[in-house]
Length: 509
Ligand code: FES
Image 1 (cartoon, helix red, strand yellow):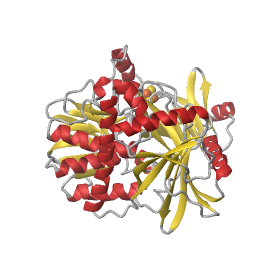
Image 2 (cartoon, protein in one colour):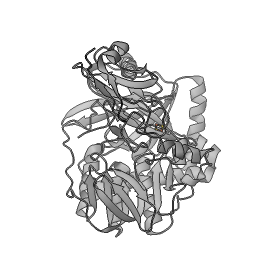
Image 3 (tube, helix red, strand yellow):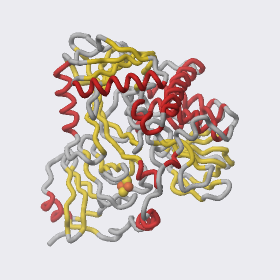
Image 4 (tube, helix red, strand yellow):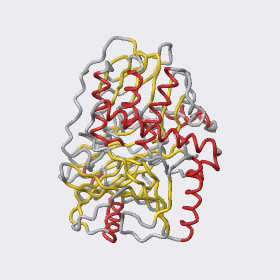
């Protein structure tokens, strides 16, 4: 199972790529085209297909290539944005609706597991949230009160399942965990068995907003009555990207010498917070822990985030072996709730689901339900709550779109002398940097074999300068989270195009 970086998550291990039943585009009009074969795209596709809609899912790479293959797969009814904040920003009624929708999302996952007999190690778990100082304890009390009001089954606890010192703790009952890749693959199969079309390696390159919609892809034209972007932020330029900040989160799966694996999910209250849980795969238990989140491309040495997480874990756990370490990307909305519904600036048959924060597994299924209801019934009880149109207009947006059109190709036909560039950069193996040469910026990476990879570091979305992510060996954009591999090939939207590759040539002087 491939992913969007150099590290390997625990879920990828021993998982082959998903083989879809359809490999070429069919000449037909779909009711709904879903862009993105992650957990949002697949779960939404299945619900729509079951409701009688003819659906196609187009995945640019392979199923689970993005964040769905790199999650730590916590299923929560309490969110990164706690209920006291939701209540403050949106009102008490909205906090109750968030809880109800989250509960329904977990119920839907459980229902899918039963209906399709999915063996994905789903288990209900208590979720512990604990404070470690006075300020956090006060905040925990506020969260407790607001969560109770919202509908959560939450009680105070004298203990937590990890050996970390704490002041106060609460237990959210009926949280859950599962193996996301096994679940995703089974759901994809159920979608195809129900008559859905799933094409991998199919990137949507343009949308003509006719009626019905006509999509260009690198595999040909696709026609559909409705379109859903399940790609985190939508590709291209959309005001929504200015309201969703990309973050990286770091995770590790470790074995423990003392076998003292936590019974339950646990979360501290630092910002960024640490999170813990246990997973058993093929008879082997692992502690999965995560944290050290930061805005994408805002940390110079991302490998150091793993080191920091590891030394933090060593303080509290008797680690036998670090079996897996990986990072993944999520998008955080500015007001704490995701954007699920009509995509701003588009006709009312174009939908989006993004801004999940760290609650992607739960919000993906909320999105599946909301979008299916909106498309099938024309309404959803959660439409207003998650409406993306609550964002304000972005100043100078037309100029931004114009600029985006000029971004690519400014080094076409140019080449640079390899030895001069190498001398200037003076890279060690495994190192990358952006150098200036004759007023041009060049992004260089020297791989472990000594081969130099050169790209134009101007992001093909709207020109921000990409930065090297040494943990994942990718060029990441600090503005809206596009990511590219060492040769500039796109890993993550919203960019639609690869970084320009730079031609380095040996010259005889
Ligand atoms: Fe927007 Fe790079 S992702 S400029």
